[in-house]
Length: 429
Ligand SMILES: [Zn+2]
Image (cartoon, rainbow, N blue to C red; front, side, top):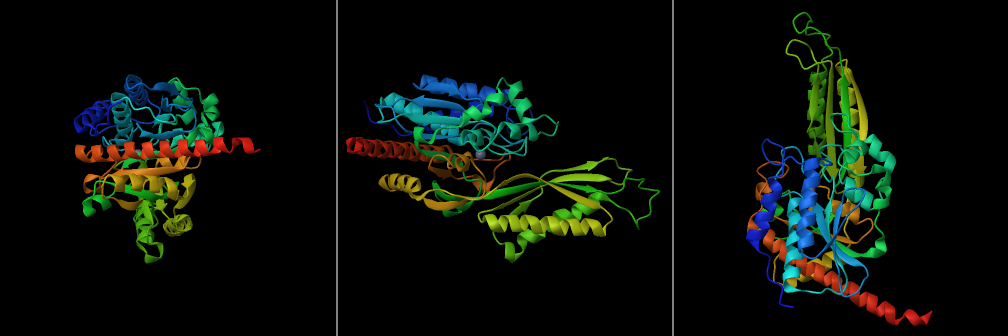
């Protein structure tokens, strides 16, 4: 065994670019959940991991799990992130963490390191809510938080259910419940991800360690008015669904800006207008609302207040507003002890870091329901994410990867020590 080298920024960069090339045409990266492109990315991840000496398994949810055997069998320390993207997203969201996992596996393989217990590297399927309005599909199933029935309910904009989309790429939705991990197979989990905010950039730091992940309440709203001729219909007495929706959108912003809701972020990111004609008053508008907060009560109160005020505003305009809850998750507090292993690894290496919260949701928050989990953030230039301009410097990715590797080795040593102590008290019963 030789000493483990530091992460190779060029190699990391080129694996990341290989992934970026697997995209629908158009600006940025479009590699949606449960598409052949996403599966191709998983196949490539599996190939790289097999070359680095890992055993590969794909579970019924489509998560790819690469296991690197240890000296003994027992609970594994794990890392990973996702390979899917939003529509016209960037190259780093999710990919940074999975490519860091690939680099960690390669570095350990090259140095011939034998860990005490196995390590697992996971590429989660369907993390982005962009296609089905449901985030973290694969990790939710892994954490035992989702059911077969839910896969029929979630549909994309073409009406394809999550279950049908899974079946179309060769997965069996009927077996999805078997995805659930057993807690005893894991000692801890660390996800590396891009920050998707600008705290690290402003602080001139390469590393963030997450203590809290925001929750999210997602609602689909439909305003129904009366479509009619734009020329023949007088201005007074119209029931213009888009004018109602416009007021509703501004109300979401207004409520979230109110100091009483400080910390809440409310966004309307999708809107469709029917019949969508220059010469017809809009009769029906459907739009999304995403409310996020690190305080679960405030998040739901904000969402409820927004919908109530939207409804009143639409009524005043002679239109009707209907609301349908798409998804609702609470903020997650990540456990101290795993985070302390990450910060101890950073301190040991003399790497400055900041503890911060995550505004975005992540596979980590699902996994954490079963396995104690930590998150490492690397900077996002100008805080931009979910856009083609998403950017993280190669050296920053490498710095995050080195810390990830060090943290996994600490989790492994800790789990082995715990197992050793328990073995010695084993005869006491
Ligand atoms: Zn992500």
